[in-house]
Image (cartoon, rainbow, N blue to C red; front, side):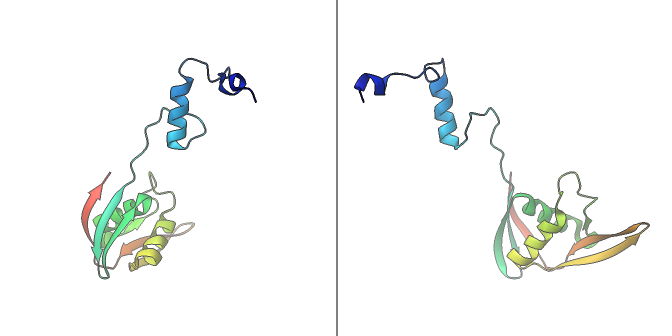
Length: 129
């Protein structure tokens, strides 16, 4: 291949600002450049019966809700603005972090729903995002 052919700019690459957009896309690993700011994941450092642990993302937000509500517990409806999968987050807290979370079945007209109560002693030591 001829050096001129190899080093010649392509039509897309020659477009004004294309080199800047490409650098941003390559740096973020995205296929196309984006104007969205990267979101910050919620991180909670807590201490339970088994010792210190760190929870991130929506699971951290679910832990925070369980700790704040205490004996009253939490239902999916009460956190429906952000927790579309509360039962999955509770599953993760039980199995990945060894927390004891009670599931209380509350009957109502047309069926039932679950109320989750944190039974393990948990202290939130540090929160971020």
